[in-house]
Length: 360
Ligand code: KG4
Ligand code: ZN
Image (cartoon, rainbow, N blue to C red; front, side, top):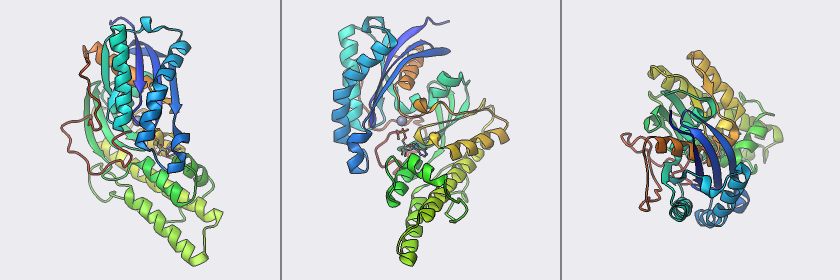
């Protein structure tokens, strides 16, 4: 049995600056603190994440969130056994800010440094939250990523498929923009959809007619644009009812496609212990319900970690770092920040996935 370790995790790959303290082993760890400073307000006026603004904000906030995480956990830097940091994939300025901060701490304190793949952080979260056993199927759905991963071990991921264009969160954000709803689009589209009729507009189910579990969301967003323009041309604008129905129909189409492809991914695999979902879009209640049904039909448990651990956070980085540390992994001052870093290096690269950079 490995001895319990205290790990400081740092996350800065997109628009959330995070620091967390975790104590335990790969078999079970406790989150002592998990601090996230969101940059949503800084980017609000631009309709998307501005990389330069993000990088500067991370550089300003990393010290502060680290101090807060230590204080909340009631530990000092001297108590830390290792520092885990997101080393990619992500917006390079932000990743660099985190890697530089972690190197400074590791060097100054003489503690081990571990570079963590951000996607591994998401993909391993069910082990932290629900003691999920390998191998399991993970659907990662966020603003920058969408992929099915078979997670065989903390460092073994097999990519079964993913989006060939937009990530679902990106599609939610664009649809919100098309319909004049506030950002981030996911929660505002979901709130509108709750008042609407998902059967009113017959939107496409992209790639459902093709084998495999690749997905596409860009056509769906264009279909929403067409319906909106047709309604505007016919009636001079959208009623509140039209907007709610369009949101409900769009959300229904996204959920149907993700559920359909999940069923396919589960049917193609054997020996799985369960089906897990992570990423910001996993907050969507309609989607969660559909995925739960799919898992149930396949006779497998469904795991959706609590929202704060589905979206970007440093606790997942600390946990992935803890597992890597136990496996003997150590980085040094040569650790580099990587804008792209696929989890499954054997899988063919996907074209154009994620307009906000290679992040999840
Ligand atoms: O994982 P995340 O917090 O950040 C990264 O993309 O890394 O995901 C953010 C995305 C945004 O596109 C947001 O619109 C979407 O998740 N999202 C949702 C919901 N809440 C957040 N999408 C659909 N339904 C939601 N309730
Ligand atoms: Zn992420």
